[in-house]
Length: 309
Image 1: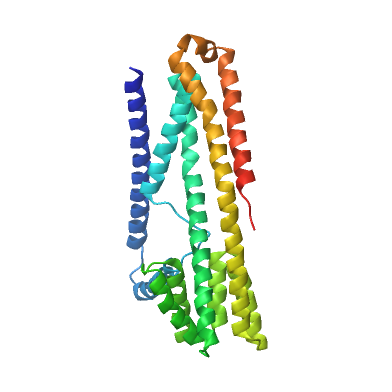
Image 2: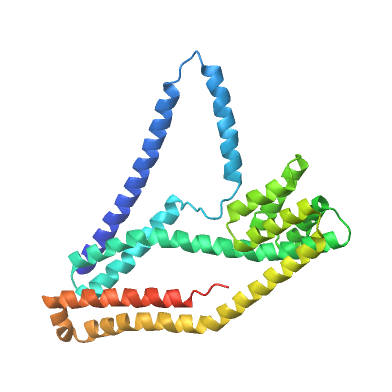
């Protein structure tokens, strides 16, 4: 009976999520349709021109990736909510042995999309930072043989395509955008500054500042790019060494966080009478305190393991 109720509850939650998403889509579509119907015929040509300019500007902004922003798709958001709800529901039922309290605990799963978005943002930035290191090595080699900065970026794209066969690789797309802007007559300083503002990475910001200063003052670009690439490479190597050293401790912290939950599960299934006092009266308060302490310990361990160079 409990399993049937759990399945029904999960099904209702999933149905509600899809219903909300579908209503939002319909509402946005209806708003767009009503706005189009309310246009005046007299200024139809003028507004069409303005709309064309807005669409072209929007298409340009969509082609440019803002690495500090990430919008989950409807599928990703739904999956995150369902997985989070099921995990918290199971945890709540394990600690409280009560479907109502388990359902309330499962509502914490609705914050799971926020954590998933943060994780995807961090992963994307790490990939871009590692790819930028390889791009600097290639750019330094191109400039050292006497190529101009513009030709150096074009040659770097060719080298990057050998390292990353996927044409949608972040650094390849960014260097292609920089090259296209240079070909259209835009200063390279502005193109690099735009890339730096969208990337929001310390290494890229430092490189851009040094590059612009060197370009304006007439410094040795080859030497500066070589030193910058070496510094960034050493920094990434230190980060990788720290990650390897902390990997074991991170696994141990996860094991210690799961251990109390496993103990409660073992006692609940093997000796239900022994855990019965914890599922009534003051037992609910004790279990709530235990969950809060476990969550606090997990948060502290994650903060300790997060080491920045």
